[in-house]
Image (cartoon, rainbow, N blue to C red):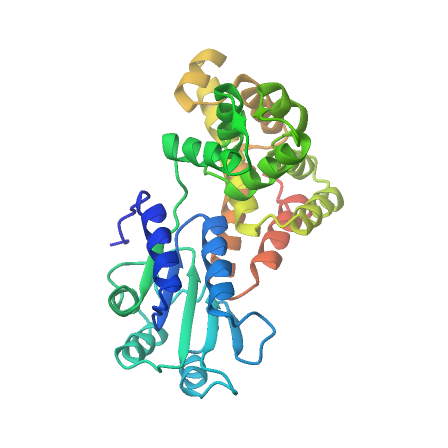
Length: 354
């Protein structure tokens, strides 16, 4: 059973973490997990800065991915830091906390008697509360659920961000920012706090010297750029324009969009195409489809346009390629970047005739 989400714990846990670090309390292990990469990164970067062992320091070591060896990590943790009181080991997306395995078991055993001179910092997108690794981290270390805030909590966070910079934001402007961060008209499947942070930074610069941010300011400088690019990417895929699709993919990577986020959005659109087609065949009106699927009219039109370029079998084939890409990346057969690129190539150049 997956560990139950507690989206309200983040603010309290962060405040406690800051206080304990200020008081000099340190744990042998920190685990920051959950869907929101922005919050995980904020906690990780802040903790590393406060511990005073930054990247590039001889006593700072980083590991990434499921191929990481627990034996190697433990050996590094047991090695005395070089002319310093602390060694920091930062590990990202090991997968040890999501499913039972030998690496997780070894880390759980290590945490029973951890080295006093080492601090392990884990950043994981998903966990399972029944694993020995998670139980040990929760018992011996400090864990924080970084699922994205929603609803009023997110709107309060938006207002607080501007308040901290001496500005107010009118309700309609905050609502529009909230809409952008949660997908808005594009029906993006999750909150995107990286996008929200970028848009707020733009607004703070645009409104410099003023005391209030208005809806007109949001409309002037903010846009759902990632979704715009995803729509263009699906356009290229539907047109079998492999070079155009790959160019857009590389552009999004250069803009720090995570491959799995792109994959989720691509899957979302192809599922939308199938569902819109099925409901149109059932002779539902556009308004009925909008109500049934919670899609905006422009997206229904877009799905209809995309659907004209695929048979049912080809749509199922693309979704199968999406699932295969995710499996290949998560099982370590390919990097996430290469897996999504392979999906794009296969769905544009290698599509079978149905």
